[in-house]
Length: 225
Image (cartoon, rainbow, N blue to C red; front, top):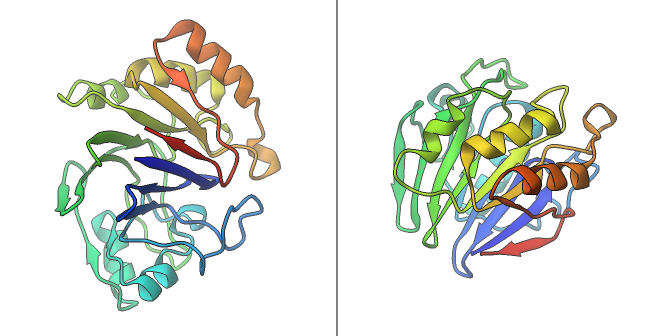
């Protein structure tokens, strides 16, 4: 499985045949590794409706035919654009030929540019024989540890560290300990001045206090599991 960082909180998971695209904020993202016209998608997954996560989901879905998975209120808004959607709520799982995605809690807010209010989520993803946990935008909270205890060890955690709008890199060290992923890839930092932080310091702190390895990716770079 290849994990390609597209910038901010956007990732593409690929096994060569299938591409799972997460939070494709590309247009307007100063650190985007690709344009919305360049990325492929078999399925699009959204953590929440803020513009820096909803991003280009609708035009990419229309171009590629990929369905979008989002929490029910957000999915309902997207469906009005003529896009195929799956609309779970927290705790819900959607199954595909490539695996499954389960929505889990995240502590944040979520209002779309169109005004739809919904509950944010994290995404627990089974893909290519691996378990990937995109924490979404979240503050540190103790129930993060429950995801790690549900029976499937987490191979890769995609974790916000930028602070201001989400937990900062110090809180994210504790989150990494709670999540207990084999590999942690930081995201949601350095895109804009309020979320600039020291990813190398985060890596050092996590690796000195937990069993996780931190892999720092520049936009466009890929980590292979």
